Amino acid sequence: MGCTNMNEDSRVMVILNSAAGTIKLAGGETIESRLAELFTGGGMDARIAVAGDGDELATLAERAVKESYSIIVAGGGDGTVNLVASKLVGSRACLGVLPLGTLNHFAKDLHIPLDVEKATQTIIDGHTAQVDVGEVNGQI
Image (cartoon, rainbow, N blue to C red; front, side, top):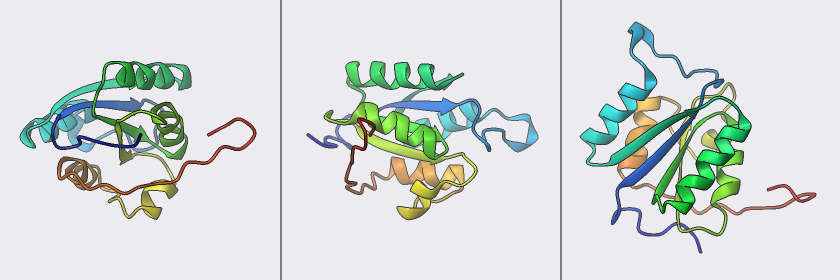
C-alpha cells in the first residue's frame, strides 16, 4: 500500500524508546512535552507514548496502525526504527523518524536531521522518501 494521506490527516503517534541514547533534554524539560509543543505548533495532533521495552514498542506500533494513525513516528535508534517500521509494512501509515539513538545510520542515510527539533520539523513539513523493505530469515 505505502504511505498515503500524509497531509490530509494530521493524527500522529510518536513512540519513544525510553532506553534511547539521547532521549533526555537539557534544562529538565521532558522530550514528551517538547515534542507535544512542536507538533501542536505545526498544526498536528500528536499522541506521545514512551515504551519501556521492545515488546511495548511493537504493541504501540501495532495499535497505532489499527487505530489508523496517518503518521507513526519512531523515536530511538536504528533498532527502534526497524521494529516500528516492521509493524507498518502493508499499511497506509507514514513512518516518521526521530533519531535518538547512538549511531542513527537509517536517519543519516536518508539525510534526516539528527537534531530532534529539526527532525520533528521535517515530519511536520511532510517530507517523505520511499524506502525499500527487505526480509531476511523471516525478519524485516
